Image (cartoon, rainbow, N blue to C red; front, side, top):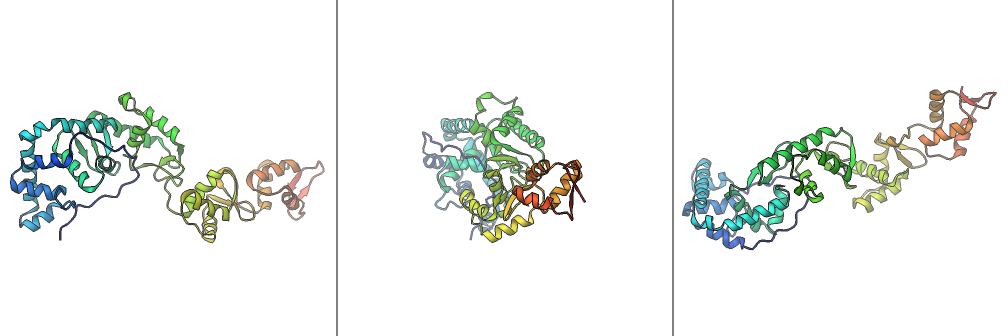
Length: 359
């Protein structure tokens, strides 16, 4: 049984338009492989999944089957690639490689690997052929996945370096919990891209460049920020509930929150589960019978009496209308509910000038 090369799990990436070329990738692969020695040809077919089986094999798997070391397989592979690069057929295929380079340039000169391969080939076999082409020509440069960026291919080192630097600076400019609209983030990104050719600066390319970063992301509402930000890192019902209430713009009943999660995000949310999650999370405040608001809106926890007390502690004695106004900024309640609490002599007293104070 062969060992397949593991495929990394990546974060979001901006799709690219499907590529269309004048050459037949299958025919070109056969012509190029014919320029390699037989043993090297077999290794390349298995390494890149260029045969009837599209599964790519590791150096170890090929070595185990052939009775040679991993390093020896690597040497044979390298020799095979060098033989093809030195061949007449490779030189004659220059126009095909130029087509691929122009396509990558149209995507912004630097592209996440998964995004690029998905656009180059409609299935695994065709993607393997283009992966082979990219490895052959020195015009294409692959950078491995790091803690900061996804694996990517580029055709211009200067542009790639500028994009890396701009993404790092953009990330550094974001605070831990900052959330921006897509337009705001793109504007800020453009501020960091002054060294990059203006020809690349369109919305599709910018978002594709953003997808290179493992630390900058967006939520289902197209809001952007650090991937670690609670509003961006969507992990469960609590996070979807936060986005649902934020989008609604005013307090919601927990049953409506559960319903909205289903319609807005296509996520199944049980009413009871949603209610329990809202109770546990400090981002939400119960402001009425089953009604929840966001703490960031200024709503505060506690019964109406507690809110009145806090208002009086902050501002001193207040008139009835002033108290109602302050309480309604913190709680979603009717005026009569506030007045019932205010007239409870155990907690509040009416002064001679008509203002109210805490007992």
